[in-house]
Image (cartoon, rainbow, N blue to C red; front, side):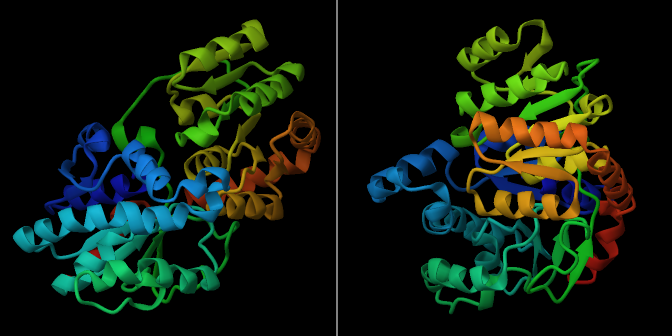
Length: 363
């Protein structure tokens, strides 16, 4: 959702009517960005419950084995049902959807409207995964009387790509692409919640399977504080917060939310799960990373790309592996130096306003 808000605000500022279709659980985020939310789809918890009901065997499998199927066959049909009515009533000039949202291209194709895919900022999936995706989304397309398009319609009319070239020089499968500087949640909603004097940031996103893994969070905090770093951790769970404070004492600050651009200004290290938002915020500030890769395909691609670019060390979920990664980053000056170089590349990328003429030309 967050990457879309930057383009949405730029379109609004250029005088265009913008509506953001998402579940009401994210409407406050959209409203805070100064945009108009429209209800679509189901909530994250509803989707997870339906996945467990429909495919109980997936509870015993890693998320990488079923995540695409869940988003394409459980969430997307509910989004499509709502989008169809919205598009028929409003008939927008263009639809912008994020790369893991599969209903947007179907609703747009049905109405004869061009659509643009907005990348998350992670390296894009390889073309063989795009071909595999067609099997998961074929029913979605046939539900409105259409044959599934190659790669499920992703990138059909263009890609807005916040992934810097240092992490993926050539986006696979893309004919038309516009580079855009990644924006953080703070930039999207104008938040200014700051914490001073932080030297390390630990955060594992918002997906519960990663964000609420107390053993991994504790290991990451321990690795940072053992090096004498004053460490900020974000979690929304009070019990996890208490455990982390017990673990780190005065060396740990726990918040439910933090302003990353302000926190990162004093950071020497970020420990995270490889989510695009956190990684790109860190690299925009020239801060190197220790990435705890736990199996999500996009996060694995990001972790591998960061390691190959020399801006991160990749760790497993065990404490020993996290210690090794943290120490490698802190003890290898070239990792931080390389992160500063990538920061220059990111900050030279165009802001969303620069894309508006190209988007207008599609209408």
